[in-house]
Image 1 (spheres, one colour):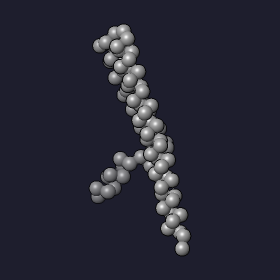
Image 2 (cartoon, helix red, strand yellow; image 1 turned 30 degrees about the vertical axis):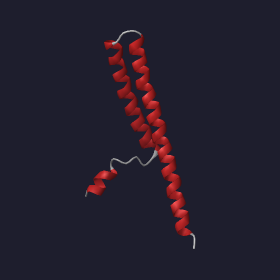
Image 3 (cartoon, helix red, strand yellow; image 1 turned 90 degrees about the vertical axis):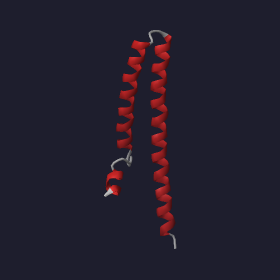
Image 4 (tube, rainbow, N blue to C red; image 1 turned 180 degrees about the vertical axis):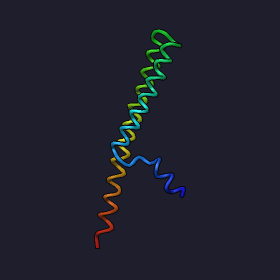
Length: 83
């Protein structure tokens, strides 16, 4: 039962990854606009840039992990097929 539920929280495809990255970006930009209201001027702009930069880093990491997991799965499949 827990295994089925835990599979819901695993990113399996690039499409799912892009949806999650989009959701992260929406939240980060919302947070960035709050920073602009709280800290007008350069401080707010720097904090907003940090929010968007974090999304870029997280998105790149998510996409890289999908690529490496796919390559690992294919390597395991190829090694299992060898006599």
